[in-house]
Length: 337
Image (cartoon, rainbow, N blue to C red; front, side, top):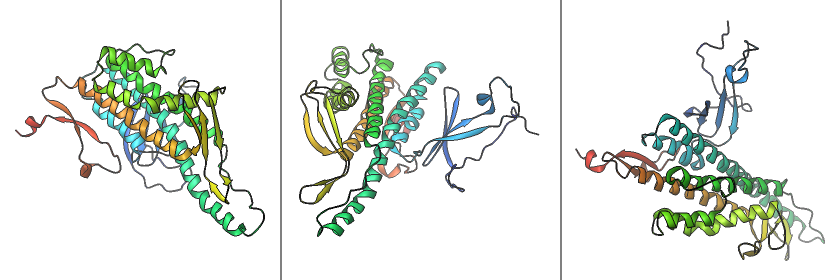
């Protein structure tokens, strides 16, 4: 007879496919919720207690739900949550502080994954539709009219989701300065990226690695932020235009493109350029920015350790099923003993 208080096991399968030969690679517990991470997916495990905490329905069963079609094989998960979950275990933090840091990591990572889902979708859709458009042009080049091209559905809505999550992720990236260096940080100044750089240069020094990194990357960081603002609050000198797959002069065609006028804040103005390429670059930049910020911060925490050091994993040893790049290990002089 089922007793929800007994120990239990769950075989996690995709709700769509009948069989899924994708074993669980790792699990994490964040804010008292258990997540199972497979190579290409993430599931949230929901116990009967979380579904029915007041015990009004004793026969309530345990279950699970897929929350991302992204798993440990993606650098966008492996190099944030999985990588840094392992690293922060060596920081000798109080239990509550460790749990808060893991919770922060997971929330930040979810913003990046939400953006990356859109990025990936747009790349796949564009790649799928381009040959169709090419066929349409070829089959109708001798006619007076070329039929309509297939379109990416709700392009503006998807770009809006991307930019909202990208900006939130960048805000969370700078929250690291509050966590590790006590930089003042709140809801009113979270997106003041130039001010954050000023604080770092004043308090950590202009030659500090983090100061130089932010200074180097500030242009694209502010570009993402102001693109999001322009889409949400358009006005003079703050405007974005989106163009779906379209016919161009000479019977050529273009994939999704955008133009942006950000002269109100950034003095930047571009006519229609490749949207998919820009978003993919943004995603890549955000991952590396967060990773570097975290690595610099952790490295300083470990600087006084006589035993442990942060080390880069050689390319030949990186596991493609979970491509983390850094780990904490014994100092070289200890490894030689």
